[in-house]
Length: 404
Image (cartoon, rainbow, N blue to C red; front, side):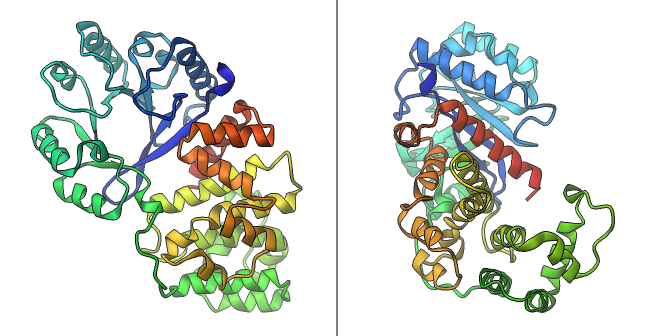
C-alpha cells in the first residue's frame, strides 16, 4: 500500500491573504470522511516521516505551519514525535472521539510544543472536552452552510483559539467570513476568479511583457537594455537580483548591459517570468503569487527526467503562467495575445495538452490533493509516489527560499 501514499497540500491564509501554513494531506481516499485503514495509516505515516524528518532546522516551510491530519490511531502513535513540534499542527479528524485518553494525549503533545487543531468541528457536548486543549478549530463552511458556520463562530469566538473557515471557494464567501471575524481561511477561491473581464494591464505588467517579447524575438542586447532603462524599478530589481548572494559573483554588477551579458537569454527569460508574477502593487494576492511560483517549480521538477534544460525552463513558464488568467482577471486567450510564447507552451496553457500538458496537470492535481488524478497521471508518466512527493516538497522549499 505504501506506493499509493501521495502528498497533497492546501494553503491556509490570514485576512490579508498571506500564507500562514499548509495543510499537508496524506490520506488515500478522495472522500474526506473515509476512515484511514491500518495499512494506509502506516504507509501515510512512513511517507510523512521519511519526507519531512530530515529537513533541517528551518524545515521545508520556512516560517509556515504544517497542519497534519491524524485519526485516533495515529494520534496515539509515536510517529508524531518525529516531527518538529514548533512547526507542526496536529489536526484531529472529526471522527476521533473526545475520550479521556485523547484529551490527555492532546495535552501531552501541546506540552511538547505541538499545536492542536480540530477538523470540521461542530460543537456537541461530547466533543466539548477537546475545545479546552486545542489551538485551532476548523469549520467547513460548504458542509455547514454560511448561516450555521456563523452560529458556530459566535459560540466559539470568546474562547482562546483561532477559528479557520475551511472550503472557502469564492471571494464572496471569503468576504463574508472575514466580516464575521474568522482568523484564517482555507480553500482555492483566490485561484478561481468569478468574473473574467478584460482588465487593463498595469504599467509594471506591461513593461515585463514588452521585455519578455523582446527576449522571445532574440532582440539585440541594446534594445533589451533600453527596455530596462525605461522602467527604473525593473532596472533596480535586475541589479539587486544579480548581485544577490545566490549568484556568488566576486564583483558587484553595476550596469544593466553587464547584468544582461552575465545572465544570458534563457536565465533572463526565466527571471522575467518570475517578475511577471510579482510585478505591480495589489495585482495578485500573496497566496496566488506563491501558488503560481510553486506550481512553476513543481512542473519543472516533474519534467527533469524527461526534458532538456530548455524544455525544463519552458515547463517552469507553463506552471507560473497557468495562473495568469486568475492574476490578470481575464481569459487565458486574451493573456496569450499579449505575450510571445513557444507553441508547446501556449498549447499547454490553453488546453492542458501537448508535451508539457501532463506535467502541468500533475502539478495541479498535487495542489488539489486529488489522489485518483495523481495516481492516473503518475502511472501514465511512469512516476512512483516517492519521486512526486520529493518534487513537491522540493518545490515548496525552493519557493520559501526565494523569500517572495
